[in-house]
Length: 197
Image (cartoon, rainbow, N blue to C red; front, side, top):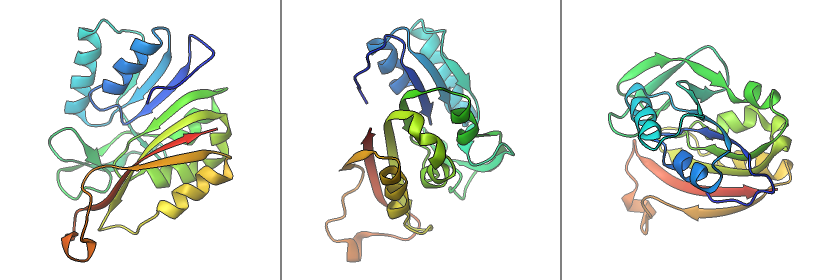
């Protein structure tokens, strides 16, 4: 997720910060970057805090909330490892949430918006589509769960309507025989989408 910036203090929103690898990389490139990092899973959040502290980073605004379409809390399933989702069926608990649209409405501009929120990305981007004009670079990890409708076309429409050019790279399992290989209850598409204004 390296990017170019004219400023030494780019504004970065990391939605789904996980254990902090992207935050550490951003701080390596731009030590004075203004970063807000969101991670709802308590165990993963603790690891994120530890990783930043171990690397001497204390100026990141860490938010232990799920990025979502409201501030009311959301039923969140933890997979017990390094991920979780509002769409996971197991280990569900209500966690605090933050509406990304509200966060963006209070910020003048965003140099990089990273969204890796395990299936909730389309809902969130549709909800904040009117605020995306403030974003220069947008990274989205798109997840298509077989238990949910495919919504890639909706996500790409939001990007197009906000004058982004996008570049798509398939990650995860590549199904060479999708008629026989895709199992119910799994993820059938996982994509990295880099959107550039």
